[in-house]
Amino acid sequence: MTQRQEALPEPDARAAVPRSRRAWLMALMIFMLAMINFGDKIVLGLAAEPISGELGLSHSLYGLVASSFFVLFSISAAGVGFIANRVDTRWVLLALAVVWSLAQLPLLLATSVGTLFASRIVLGAGEGPTAGVAVHALYKWFPPERRALPSALYVIGSGMGVFVAAPVLTHLIGRYGWRSAFWALATAGAVWALLWLLIGREGPYGAQAGGGAEPVAPTGPGGAREASSYRRLSTSRTWWGGAIGGFGAYWTVALGSAFLPSYLRSQQGYTAGQAAQAVALYAVATVVVPLTVSPWTARLFRRGVTSRRSRGIPQGLLVVASGVALAFLPFVDTLSGQLILTVVAFGVGVGTFGLSYETAAEVTPVNRRGAALGLLVAVQTLPGLIAPAVTGALIDAAANDSSGYKLALTLGGVLTVVCGLVAVLTVNPERDKARTPAVLDAQPLPA
Image (tube, rainbow, N blue to C red; front, side, top):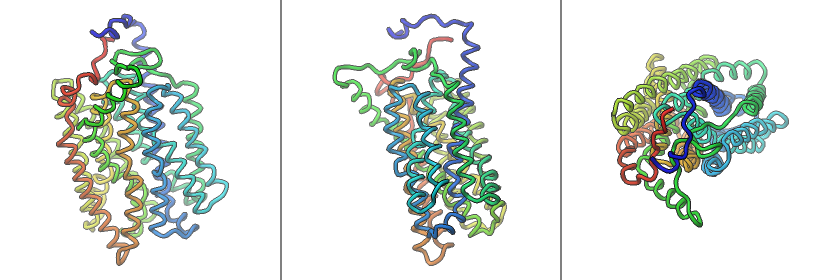
């Protein structure tokens, strides 16, 4: 036992049930946070045609607008991750939710291409850190061997956000105009912030707010030990494998959010309602896959299967499957084939995110975890900045829209497959923990 562990008081069994209830309440709040977060992401894609028509946007300019959401997204994710190492996550998440709500207001009061760019950039800066900080907050409430389902819940919240938002926002856009969708999302963010202010708390498995049962990285004069800890993280193939695999998965997320509704309507002849239903259908997969894969991998891990085999290889294979489906999507003409490939391409790869959070946490000390997860999200979400702009440019540069979409989807699929294979080959927490035992995410004391 370390000195830190020896100093901890004996757990009070009477507090276990209330603590468990509080933990799942926090998980529910973060699930709702993820729903709103992804509603904000997909609203632009759902309103693409009326916005482009009103503002006269070409495919390329629309792609730049979609990418503008991610101009500060990754930078903010990394920077706020370091802040989350030192500031209670309840206050960080509250501040982020307030930024989301305020960022929507310019579009409700005045509209121009410049206003649209500014609103999306600020919104992205507020939402960029959310995944890393939210998962860091969740992990303060659950010990390492019980994190599979909470991690999956965050990812499931994202899928449910798409599932609920797609038909609801499409209805609002069709009946009340596209600004009504932004009103709805701004209101949802404000309500969540108020609820979180009232009930958000820090968990017991963390370095802040009373400590916890996990070890923290040692500190020293001048921050030398801290710098050494981050240098070890920067050479972790597990961390980089999860980041690159997530990069591939997020390429499909970015395409789905920005271009899938327009692609289905302009190239496949779907109505607005049918396109929204197709988006909602793949959103179901983003719920089912994490709910299936994460508990399965957790059972394997608890039975003694290595983390590489139970978490590492599956997270890469999910991305590979998504990439293969994306590459073949524009070459299938049957409705059933299109729907199956749409579901796999845009709904399966997201299962890798929860697994990558778990494997990254395994090789990161708890008081570096906020930054480690923030940096992980920063790399994983870079396609949000790149994919829409590249896709829009390819469509405009092609002989016709059909050829442009085929090229963009095929190249995106190939890139996604390559990223998934990298994750399969590199994610190995046991190897990294043996190389740098100081960053073990140790098991907590019995509760």
